[in-house]
Each structure stands twice: as C-alpha cells, then as structure tokens.
Image (cartoon, rainbow, N blue to C red; front, top):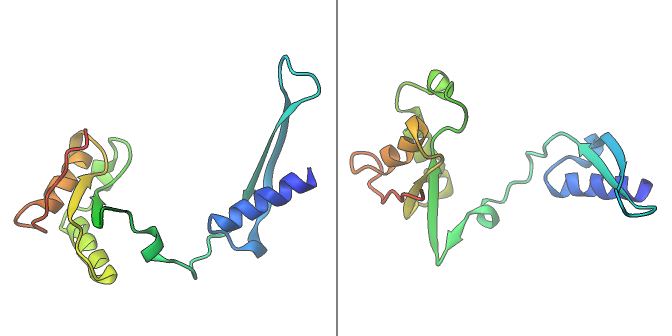
Length: 137
C-alpha cells in the first residue's frame, strides 16, 4: 500500500499539486469477484494547486497549426442566473488572447443547447471577434 500511496502522490504532483501539501484523502480496497486473492485498490491523493508553473505553449490545443478556442460557461440551467450580464465573457476572451499573443482560428461552443451553446457563436460573431464558429454537435 505504501508504494501505491507514493504513486498516487506522484500523480497528484504531476497533475499540478504542490508536493508539500499532498496528502492521502481516501484509501479503499475491494475484493474482485470471481478472481481469487485479487483486489481493486483506490487511493486518492489531494493537494494545493501549484500556480507558479503554467506553460501555455505546451497546453495550447492545436491541430495542423490551428488554435481552436472555446468560450462560455459550463453547468446546470442555473448558469443563466450566475452568468455575467455585460460583455465579461467576450472581454475575458479578448484578454486571454492578448495575454497569449494570438487569436484563435475558430471557436467551438463549450456546451450544446441553451445560453451556454450560444456563447461560442456570440464570441465568434462578426461584431465580436469575427472568427468562424464551429458547430461540433
């Protein structure tokens, strides 16, 4: 179990946790049915996110040299209550691309249906960023 716990901690660090803050939050073992002397072991490690290392160049999704953006909010129908009423979503996209020193080649809505699905279309509109909006539905 010690070796598996260490692997869970290492995975948490690889996924962005600060090693000093990582702890084992949960450890469970379930016997596998119909397989003698075998168990399924689940170990969950948690830790604070390391904000000091962010490499946007490695994380930027590209396909054939193109950057595809995604804008909008994700969540339940309650998102319409939480959604900003002004141009905050479009403005946040503009700020992000200014920071990245690039403009996406297209935008894909984050979700299909409702207001969430429309955000990608609004961001891509000719009166906004004037980039193609892709219907991935």
